[in-house]
Image 1 (cartoon, rainbow, N blue to C red):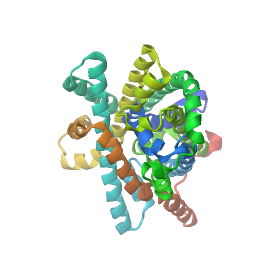
Image 2 (image 1 turned 60 degrees about the horizontal axis):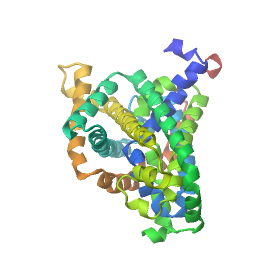
Image 3 (image 1 turned 30 degrees about the horizontal axis):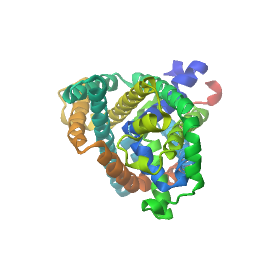
Image 4 (image 1 turned 30 degrees about the vertical axis):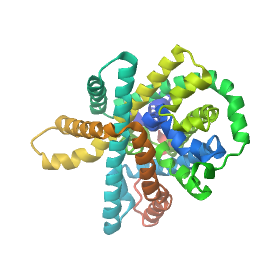
Length: 399
């Protein structure tokens, strides 16, 4: 570890802070992003503000939150998200209550996101290559299992690799799609359609929008153990936070612009992205194949990131109960049990999982896990600094 800390060249930039940003972003672009359902559910049904303004506001909140949490992780060095929560809250009662809440939200996040991911991946395998649903599920689960069990460096490298693929396809879709879609999108935005037309008051619409900060930060649990190797200086924390915020915001705006050209009917489509490529952009078969690639890559990267975060949190408690086994077996059991549960939940359908599950999880958890940390993390760090208890970090000048 010390040897790595002394290497601060361009290689470190991409294997350290930008790798962490890529891991965060690759978790965001999961099944909801790939299908487009997530974008229509949070942004497009809020009216004209959902095209540029709403994603930008969420991006700003994401940058501030990520920088704050990155700095906390860099200094305090928690090994998993429960340990992170316990370090923030020192009062034993508050720590236990909020720690349990964080655990419950973490479990639901894995179940909801991965169930949507498995459902979407199996359907894509079946519709594109004719692979039976059961076989597609097993194939996809095996890929997640192998990548997740390989360790921190592979998770970071996989996040970087999938991010490059996803960004390439998103840029391609932007190049071929934004210009054809812009006249219709601009016409719709000029109508200044309000959230009330979709059943939202302005206040509640903005509340739902800002809770999407949690979705931009979907990789937060996996980022905790990954930060142990990815963050060394405050600049690393800044770069990682800015990288994730920009990647999430710009990629989202590509689709909000294209989807705006299909409003309001597109919000009723089960796979808005595919509908936009076929009906709005008039994309070629090559573009549609690239869409399948981005969808599968997004789902795989999300699954790996979430499962990795789950292992980091739950392997310790499981090993305390199952004392006669090794780390590989414990990690494998956690991933397999999670995938089985997610497969069962996936039977309710991706629209229900995203439209209902994602929304209510965000509305309930975001104020506690995200917005409260804007207060509690600075308070914890200032209090520890005042009492001389702030952990020491390496001198940046020596790195």
